[in-house]
Length: 106
Ligand SMILES: Cc1cc2nc3c(=O)[nH]c(=O)nc-3n(C[C@H](O)[C@H](O)[C@H](O)COP(=O)(O)OP(=O)(O)OC[C@H]3O[C@@H](n4cnc5c(N)ncnc54)[C@H](O)[C@@H]3O)c2cc1C
Image (cartoon, rainbow, N blue to C red):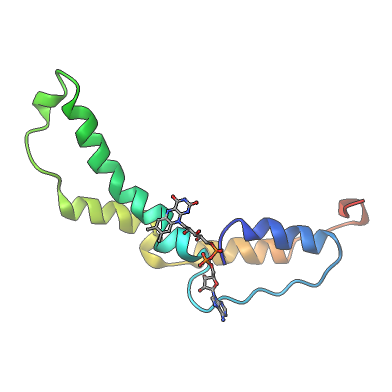
């Protein structure tokens, strides 16, 4: 289950439907743990160093190679070390939200 799906089942519940959620791996899906987020987290330091290399004054300050361990630490931070507890809690909050008749789509 990917993040945007939350809007779908929140709307479903607001419409009065019964909504169930099943996830076999990590709540958040590919984007959060293997795709968009970790890949961009690893690309950012590469781009930052490349950008600095094009700027006089900054270029001279970048003297060494990328710190690979640091790049992976950044990736692990952005994937919450592949712990989906926070995402799962947000899903549960959506599922237990109370809706009134005025929340229903016309
Ligand atoms: C390296 C990489 C970089 C990417 N970068 C970007 C980007 O920058 N921008 C972008 O828009 N897209 C990007 N993508 C694509 C993006 O990750 C996917 O398009 C998106 O995650 C698809 O979302 P989804 O909800 O359809 O599927 P998923 O995120 O795969 O969600 C499906 C979920 O269903 C669960 N599941 C599957 N079968 C079952 C079952 N039988 N029972 C219970 N649960 C099940 C899975 O565990 C998974 O959590 C990237 C992908 C990769 C690999």
